[in-house]
Length: 311
Image (cartoon, rainbow, N blue to C red; front, side, top):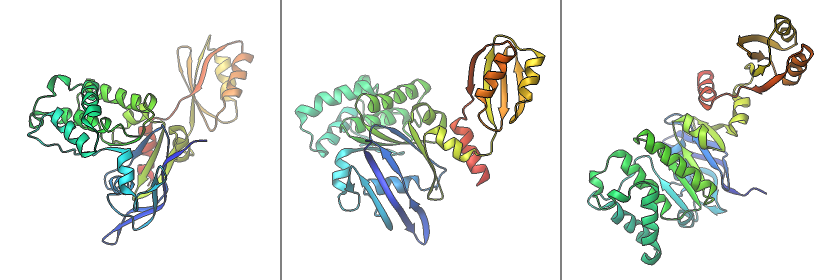
């Protein structure tokens, strides 16, 4: 049975008569990387603040590992690491000194914290600049240090808000790899808020799309795609041993086939529904062999754009 790390029930927050979060039901499961998506002003940050117990909901409930975020926020924060979008450090302290300060603030004994800090600095690629004052750091270096600040707490749950902002491509790969390791090797549950949809698609197990404070879709990318892209034609890709005019005519006659695009020995077939079984049988009946046949999945970007175009 899967354990829910975060669960909200009809969560709402009203500021000056405006609903920033509106009847939100969100569930994040233990060990997963959950992508939290939506345009600016959709309610993502307000939701995160309520999960952390940093702002109280107007109505509804939010629990993290069973703890009520309104009544037991300190218990939640002991279990949680948080990387905000605009992270701040003591600029006149070094990277190492900032991490030492964080561990002492969290009452982690130096005997345990100091070796952990060295390990974390290595993981985020800051060992060589560990004794440099943070005021000399670039935006990307501060983001890496922010990841270090999350890891040094050894959290069970981590909230990462735009963690790759301002980082060069090589650094992005390092951070994405680190996030995957946090989930797979350390069993840290992660809420990842990001505008970079291709990154979310690469590493997230499930996603939730929020709009105007409401959760409009939640689940695997495939599940979310089916909900939002309903009515859209399915594309089926197939690679064959040979393609003949008779075979093309036979496929076109299959009820539900809308269009066929041919490229060498490959076909891209647009259908009203999943017709892989019918297409495979037709290929074989026409003396060819389907070497590969699969549906062409929608990208998260296509799903996201389609929703906000139709909203």
